[in-house]
Image (tube, rainbow, N blue to C red; front, side, top):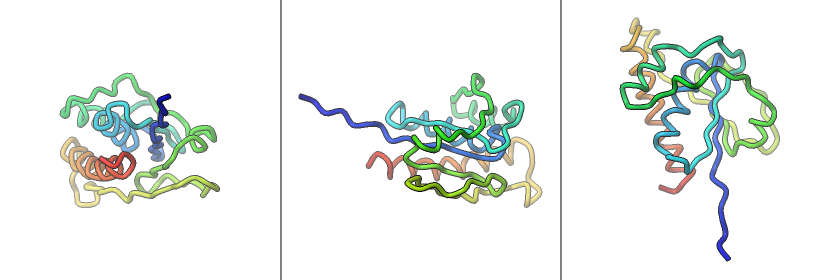
Length: 140
């Protein structure tokens, strides 16, 4: 009899779920290739994805054009093994039994860097963190 193990689950959260959490989810989905269950959501979801986030992932061959901003739900929080809050704007209350990490991601706009250059730097910062989290969750 073979025993199946449940894939680890991660929820990426930012305030609008149009940029940073979508970047993290897209990067984790590509890296994990189905070995990690990935969700993203926002505390105050936007109407649409940030086009620069979509473009910065497209540069890496990751297509998230079918995604859309979603609100954080209790079910998402309850089923995630780890919740990652990206940036300084999104706030989540601690929950019993839920591991929540806060990633204070690079914000190049504070240094006057804007546009696709900014988004590339944000993406690269998040990508390094996603790789570390993936290794922790999977032992790979």
